[in-house]
Image (cartoon, rainbow, N blue to C red; front, side, top):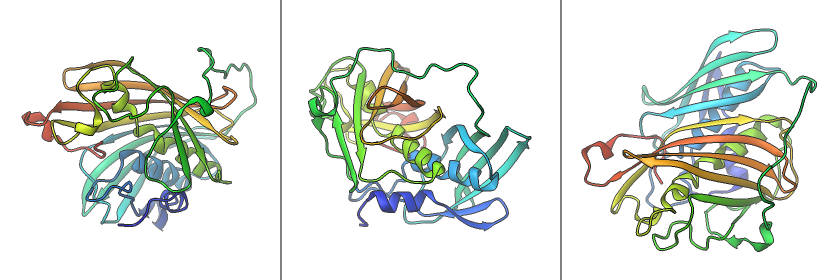
Length: 288
């Protein structure tokens, strides 16, 4: 199993042109032994980079992906960018990510050219967090990344319960110099802790039980970026699950700098179903 590292993940995001509007990408299995599933957030990040390369001179403002079939990390991904419209400022595209002639995910991407402020508010309005020093170190395989969780020692444990809210502090050994890779890096982590956030409010169930007693999957991810997408040191992902039921969960979140400046906002639609349910076999791009 290839080790998951920051350097390798950035290279995976940086998809290779195959021809006009077509790109090839590798995958990472997330550092989990025996896991043959590509993270949906990785495909989202690659789709954003592909759209930016197909429509140069613009930055990604938002991207929304649906994961319709499992992607195998052992097979190459092919991404095809279909331009919907390319105006003087805004552009939009639909990216189809596939393997072996079968679509695995689709992403709708909005791009734009940054403009001067007319108005601006971009600061965290909630209670001030205690900071990464007061958070618990957490294991999540990727060399070159540190992760700390606010008030949670084990995010996957069915015994660790609380409100369906989870704050995560991340620090990368280096921040990409390219704007498109910074956006891809921020998008990548949006799929990692949202299901754990939803399960946290319910005693006796946690992501450690995934694929043992429950089936979980990320079905859709959306991310919106708030310029400038630059940071130093720690960044904070604030997750809040506002609904869980009917075999699904919804989580919204924000990505902020250590001093509370908003970098991005995100949402996730996830499947949470009993392992024996017939509907639990619905394929998805990322299972947690």
